Length: 311
Image (tube, rainbow, N blue to C red):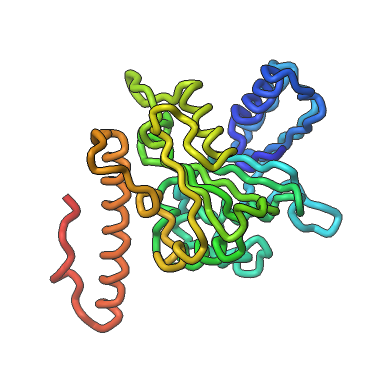
């Protein structure tokens, strides 16, 4: 298992703890991680050691500019499982080095936003046949335009995207931006080929003092929804739908969860889900306006006459 942005090793430790709780042989799993910050990488090593985990390799370095794990041919090493919660919308991530990088198999992401650089690095790190990727991303990756739209289309056409799971708002300490979980698989099951599984988990949370939290039940409901492809919750609060490729194509390869899963009008409105939808719509509007202003400027029109304050 490999985490290319492992931080202090929290996700790697959590994985081992899950295996222990399930009574499985966690010692058969070797852990790999890369972390750009020297001090944080050292903390990750100590964290794993304190949790009595010995079979690990944590390296310090910039994953996007200089991936530390490579095979004998100089290509990025591949793993059965790749997981990460990368920094959202990282700017100055090293786009100038990527035009000739084989990891840019679907295109070079914008220099101001490294989300799809992390995604493509992780997919490149999947083992052929058995590889899976789970990555937490901001909702913007589901609908942003320009180069990111072309990369998103390429990923859907390659049919490695297995699931898009909408998460509750205000879930992470570092940001209140709504997030989603993307799952990629090198070899999808027959019933999921040419489809993407959408799961709306935005209402699955418990309010806490400073941020929302997902309970064990919330997590179990989403895991079972992913495994079965159906809503197994008695209350129907994990909306699930397996969407065919042609429908995604007809929507311009927009992967916004709300485009494919509609909540019945008679259901009580959920504030958390409404906030996610509002944030999505706001960011989508800003992206569309930016593209329009670029075209107007290219036509020689003074866009300052039209730009409105985003208040």
